[in-house]
Length: 87
Image (cartoon, rainbow, N blue to C red; front, side):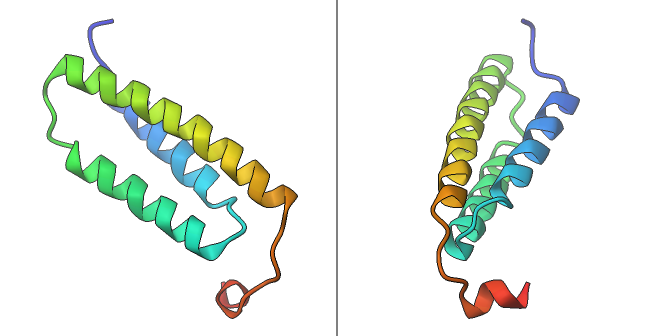
């Protein structure tokens, strides 16, 4: 594989943000969103194909972790907080 296309990276970003919205706890949801945006902003100027592929694979692994975590958070819902009621 020669490198990662821009569309694939954008698709991964969208998938990560979509699954992070499914977290039932506000703190986890907000942290995951901040962390995702931070990682993508730090690596936006990366021109090294090998490093890009490595980061993309890492992002795909993190997507799977976040997806499993969001499923677990939905299985064991918490009592709604004031912050959750505002959104």
